[in-house]
Length: 89
Figure 1 (cartoon, helix red, strand yellow):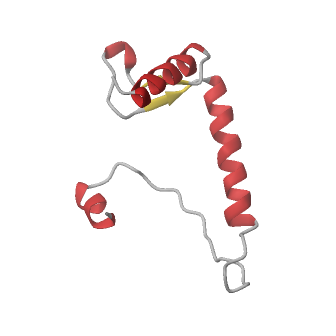
Figure 2: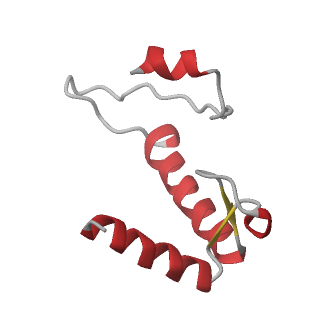
């Protein structure tokens, strides 16, 4: 097993033991790539999202031309038709 995979296994194990994340439908065998958030995971995700929103949408950075970068918020599904992912690269 590559070092990166071993590290990820340890990290996921720690996060599961501490109640941050759980594989979605884990008791039924799970669904690859889908995760549910435990009590601590929900708080961490909310804090990261709020900080990102503040830094990029509410208080956008200055672009290379000296003007604020125009950024808008968007909330959409990430489960999409595979053609969308092919088109986006």
